[in-house]
Image (cartoon, rainbow, N blue to C red; front, side, top):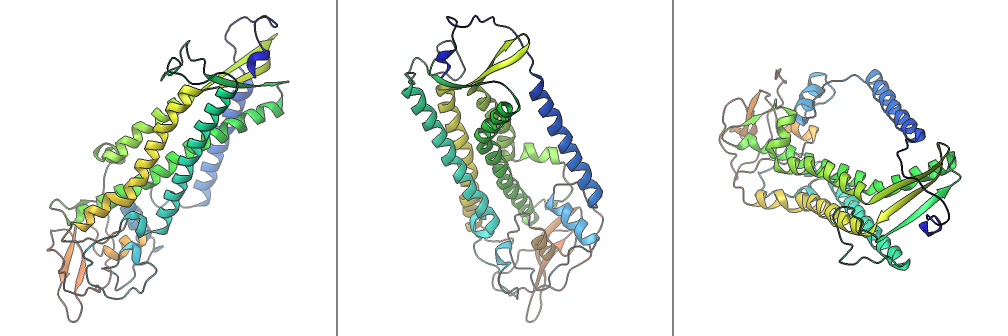
Length: 360
C-alpha cells in the first residue's frame, strides 16, 4: 500500500512532470489506427460513406451485391430463418430482443458488463475497508476533495517497459466494461433509431431516406442521451482514479494508482443505469408500440436484406403500404406517394422488386 511512501522517509517536492512513454504509446496507437483505416480503404471499395441502412441498401443494390428475394414483401427480419412464402400481415410485431439473434447477444453482453461493474465497486469498497479506509458519509463526494480519504493505492517501482505494460493493462482491463458497454449501447440505440425511421414510411409525412447524420442525433432522444452519456461516464471514470508519480533527477522511478471508493461507488450505478436503459429499449420500447398498431409495417431493424425485400420502389420520400390487389396474392411495397393501409385479411406475396433510383 502507499503507506510505505510518506514524507517521513522520503522528502517529496510537488511539481509537474511529463512522462514521455504514455505520449509515445498514444502516438503509436493513433498511427496504428490510421494504418488500419488506410489499409481498409485500399482493400475494399467504399460503396457509400453513409451510416444509414437505407443508403447502404441502395448502394448494394446498385452495385448488384444484394438481390431482393421475391415473395417476401410481408416478411420481417425475424422471419429470416423461416419459409419465405406468402403471408398475411401480422397483428403484432416482436420486440428487438425476439426479432434478431444478434441483438440478443449484445443485450446479454451488456448484462455481463453490468455485473462486472458491480463486482468492481464491491471489490474496491472491500479493499478500502480492509486497510482501514472505509466509506463514510463524511467521505462521500461526487468530486475528489480533501476529505476523500476513502481510497486504496498500489504502486510500481523500477519503472521500466514491464512496469509500464502492466500499468496500461491494468487500466485497460478496468476501463474495458465502460468502453465495450457504451459500444454495445450504441449498437442497440442505432438499431432502434433505424427501425423508428423505417416506421415513418407508414406515417403521414413518409420516410425521408436522405437525412443529415448529425440531425438524427438531436431529433431522436435516445441518441441524444447516449451522445451526452459517453463523455459524462468517461469523465466519471477518470474521477475514480488518481495517478501520481515520484521522479528523481527527471526520471520517473515510482508511480501510484489510487482508486477512490466514493467516486467508484458513484460511477458504477450511473454506468449500470445507462446499460440497463439500453437493455430496456430492445425488450419493451417498440414491443408495446407495435402491439397497439392496427397497420403493421414489417420490422427491419436496419437489416439491409429485409429492407431490399420490403422496398420495391426507391425515391427520396417513400410511403409503404398496399399497392396492388391480386388473385390469389396481393402486393405491398413502397411508392413516392401515400399508399393505403395493408389489408389484414389479405395474403401478400409481392410482384418482384424494382430498380433503385438515385436519391441525391
